Amino acid sequence: MSRSSNRKQEIYKIDWHLPAVSSSAAAHHISRDIFVLTYGVLVAQLCQDYPSDEDVNKCLDTMGYNIGIRLVEDFLANSGIKKCRSYSETVDIIAKVAFKMYLGITPTTIGANDGGNGFSLVLDKNPLVDFVEELPAGRPSLSYCNLLSGVIRGALEMVHLPADVTFIQDILKGDDVTEIGITFLRKLDDKKSKRKK
Image (tube, rainbow, N blue to C red):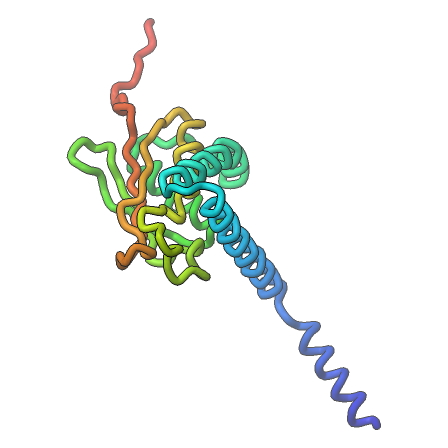
């Protein structure tokens, strides 16, 4: 009998010394999984409600936009980010801070286009498609993760950087990666205003 009680104490000691980080990481992983599964149910319901892919894509983009205009306040409050000085700095912040904060991933950024206002975020792993093997049957032009483009567009608009955000590549459509294109619609004014003396 004493042997079994000692064993319980040893197990208790092992559990007692587990680092707090692992329980936090587990909770984060569970909540992300719940979000991803819930998102899948949302997309499935939209596919039932709307006959065309274009309507579903538009609805997901609108939902994402509404999330983005609210999420930007949380992002600015919790990230400590100051005003960005260029479009490339803005895209780096989106990739390295925002995606890491909310989705736990860090996309690769692809530099500016010829005009200096177009960039891409390349996601080697897209958490929104963790439990999705393929697009629903008969939905070839469905942009399953279009919520993300709406979130980015809404958040950028709230900081006075209107942009066109679209999916260029999609893992669910047979591409190797997911690529989100961001094209800023306003030309960045490089000149600093001078104060009159």
